[in-house]
Image (cartoon, rainbow, N blue to C red; front, side, top):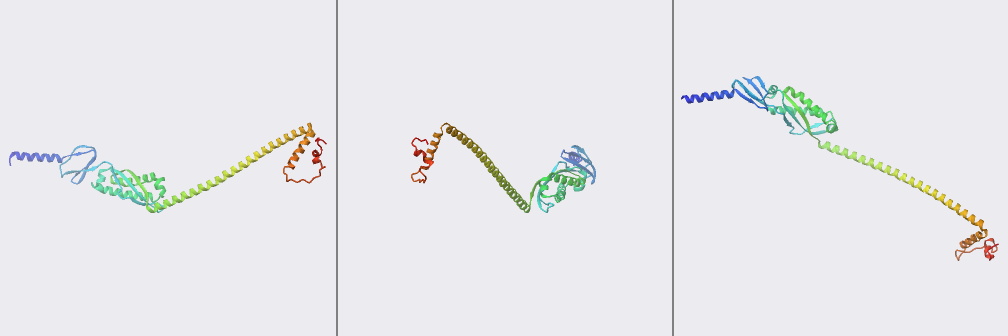
Length: 291
């Protein structure tokens, strides 16, 4: 072996030793340094770091970013009314304590996600089982999410995990609950329609009775005014007749007799049985029209 070959081997050995004694921690990672399988330190800041060459010391990298777990299968959760709800959820989490996380799961992120999924299912059951459908769907939805977050956060913290957020993406009724809800809604709408129809009929009768009453009042007022006007007219006519009679009593008597003759003899078939010498025919018997 010549000198140049030995030099190359030495340089390669130095390069290997140098590379094995250095490691780079990125902004997205934690680094755990182990010495012969025993933890030595945790590196949380990005940069270039040194260690003893492998296998004396080795480095395990863990992801420090926020990760999202979406429920692959919808959860079927029962309410306090024994009705099933179909719930989709997701959770955002990250590694808070790298060493504790490594002790719990090693570097297996999938195992951590499976554990969190199980905890979410337990928390969902604990929160939904004690509430009604209406409370879970609308009235207390935010409260349910806060309870689930607190529940999962407390159980995940000893595992080195920080739960950032928990959300219920979708809450739907199961088929049997949907049928029950739609039937109840239909009955409520029908009851409301009947109530509105009954109220409308009662109000219609009230309006019609009020209108009839007003018509009768208006007619009574109009008749009273007509009678008053008619009475005033008749009084005025009587007054005029009296004045005319006082001015010329003979003419007034003659005029009244002529009107009586016109009314009595208005038809040729009229028949009148009376004494020709009676006072009714006094103007027929007196050509002068005076008595």
